[in-house]
Image (cartoon, rainbow, N blue to C red):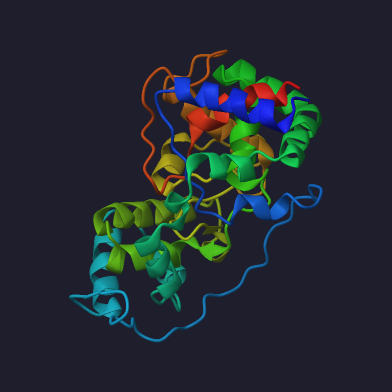
Length: 300
């Protein structure tokens, strides 16, 4: 195992050679789990979103042009026109209200205030690397099958898995519907959030997950490798064959979906990153080049 100093220097050299550096982690802070060994994956308990007071506009300079109820009615009409059933929409939006914590996070974007190397020092702890090496062995058969089908290195996949959610332990506990509805109503990029919200409803209608179980980051990124809903709809796969593309609870589905995404983005096996620029927005939570550059650390 390389020393901390040599590991950091090696990583800096690799990342400096990459054409892309996307350092985003909008789920729970990745360093929180580094103080203890990796626990067994568990599904977070379902908690119905609490009813909150109307948006307070004074402290965040928010100026809504309509009430949330008015916005919701307009979006409902658009969703139904796009093929979402009334039952799916009404169930997903039951008791949904704007989330001020999401607005604050959207305004502050605290993850971009840290220097890149400070982020890496926390994200690439020795314990996380050891856990990644352990999981390479534990899921060797699944990873081999994924690698054969999609041509994406298993070390890169496990690196992404570790960077995005600490191997599934920190996926975010926000209601994706509520978060995206908040951003679509009064976020900085309402059109983008609305497109993601419609995609999330399509996922629910497809039967991959129930609305109250669709948890993720404040920005709407979901699952063990933090897909935004539109990316999920185009790249998520049911690799374990249970009839659902379950990137929340199935490592096989999450890793295969990630491999499918990287394959579509021009991944070349054995290289440090995709051969073309991947379409990663700030809310997509996908620092693929950085994770790929961390890949040699998992080789020991």
